[in-house]
Length: 323
Image (cartoon, rainbow, N blue to C red; front, side, top):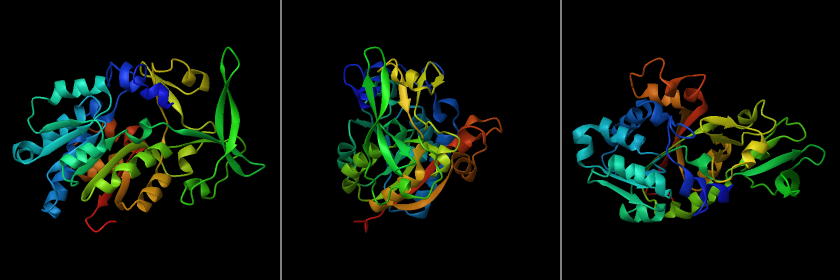
């Protein structure tokens, strides 16, 4: 999955992604509606009113085509933008090119290749926001063995014509893993773990001294995230088609997006162990409507049967006292 997405010469994000939105392989909330960007702008204003010592610096991780940044800056207004410095961390050259084309004329926008560089430029004080970032990290695919009551990795074996999934090593779970929680899974249930995201987060977190963080992504709490999904949530997106069979997922390496839902139970407890204080956890629809955004009832970003409920918003805080 990591090679298919991030290989420098042939990876989907690093080389082959053309755009995001209706003309791309998949769409995001900011490319379909301005309401999410508007609500984030409202959240920033709310935080600044509540604490005037908070920095007027934003770091967006994985800026997509730049639509969210453009919307946030527009809805902050002239006075809100006047003191603001907006940083984007982007490793995808094709997407960075689109962002610069959309935002490059703004003097206060800067681009970085990694979080440590971005945080160094802000003195370790910043608001950090991301939309559909966690799901873009490579995930491990695990399978439940009901007889042995253990989780095993899923490995792939090639028989000369196709990839065949086979049981791999048993997994030693972290003490805080949501997979330690009670569940009623039947034999063969598959789940995904975003351990690579948590490892990446732990790598730069010590450099973040002060600020607020919004993590927006599709997913749910455990075990509800896998309700009626015995094969897990791993899937591919190609030309706006959602592909869920393992055969389709393993086809076209580097030519399609690969993703999995976020287990927010796992994410919340394990990031708390890293020193992040949770302020709120809610659906995207609740977050948008809570910021008094006058969204159209047909707005896809608040649709309770779509993105409005499928996407969750996790608000966490890093204080100067956190160690």
